[in-house]
Amino acid sequence: MITALQIKNFKGWQDTKPLRLAPITVFFGTNSSGKSSIGQFLMMLKQTANSTDRNRVLHPGDDKTAVDLGTFDDLLNQHDQSQELDFSLEWAPPKPMGIEDVLTENKFSGSKIRFEATIGFENGKGLRAICRKFKYKFTGEQDNSFLAGMVATEAAGEFGLETDGFEAVRKQGRVWPLPHPTRFFGFPDELNSYYQNGETLNDLAFELQKFLRGIAYLGPLREEPRRRYDWAGETPEDVGTRGERWASAFLAAVDRKIILPGKRNGIGFEAVTATWLQRLELIHSFTIAPVGKGLREYRVRVKVAASSPEVSIPDVGFGVSQVLPVVVQSFYAPANSTVMIEQPELHLHPDVQQNLADLFIAGVKSREAGSNRNIQFIIESHSEHFLRRLQRRIAEGEITEKQVAIYFCDSANGNSTIKPLEVDLYGNITNWPVGFFGDQMTDIAMMQKAGIRRRKQDAAK
Image 1: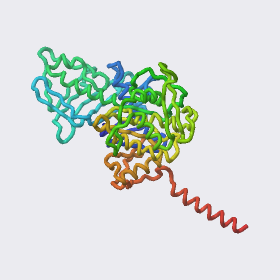
Image 2: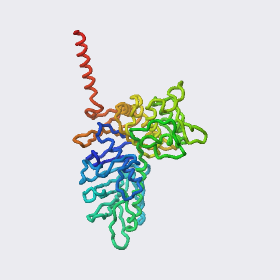
Image 3: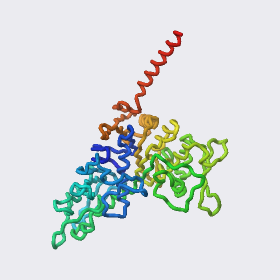
Image 4: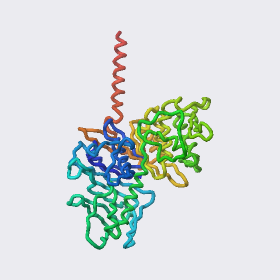
């Protein structure tokens, strides 16, 4: 789970300032305020971690990736090539990470891991992006003092090792400098050749890579429903950025049992999905079955009401097909994952929008195989109805104010700004920003004044 994030000089952001991320983190804001960029940044890091090109510092994307952010120049705030992209990321692994110095047998452990990196153009010119420095650090009250990273030296293309609490011991022979890092987070292979205990540090990069691979992203423009879906037995990583793999994910998970909040026993994945589609008041029931024996084509049939006939999913309201990937992803995500969803409320009635808050709370509190699933949701939304239900559930104690982080993004003079909304234990937002969800009170007051004026005009006729 991501616990903290800060990004500098990325697209519209000069500096997000340190952000606390909770099990349910929601970004609201005006159009073009930069709220989507935060999720895009995390997906870019994941794309880079998944890339087979170890020399590529960042992978902004292409037509085959979840996000395509252009070139490194496009990433920099105001396209200023003299700037550097700085960021820090802190996450809590499912169990404390432990590493051991192979020379001294000293052991280090961390309940939270902090990673920082600085990336810029080589020589300040728009030719090639390089990672100037990165470092890993264990944080937390009970954690061992430990820091390890790399930093560029004055000589072009040469790097030094930076450590604190851990002593890296050189092998005998000529002291060669280290080459550039692999991607933006990895120690080069030469580390093992130059240092007797260098292999100890490789576990850090592996842990970051594993964490980034646990991030899933579902975009706002979800695929239109189909009359038939193909599934050949594969287990997809997620439902896809447009929800295009929701049926495959659903079918791959049919044997899983999820324990919903307040329940003692688990129910099958199909029952979980049907339960939430009913609670969202979209349909009464649905089935997904092969078109024929031995065929890889599947057909989805739904009933809007108990007395309604079964129909194909394209023949019901568009909202069902839009929310199905959201429901499936919420429970399909493996334990300790981070799920990012843009505008889950798109094309949905206000009643359904508010019930989405309950869906995500259930996703956070659900269990599987006897353990908490420890799922984190990062949501970008424009829905007041979603927020109000979230506030209500905090007041009712269904979820605590500590388990929720809410931010309001805005834009001024071409730069994005962000404001954390302070939520008390009664669900009240104590620093409600001006213009949040529009100026409703002014609209109501003006409507009342217009009504009085028109009644006077009518009475004078």
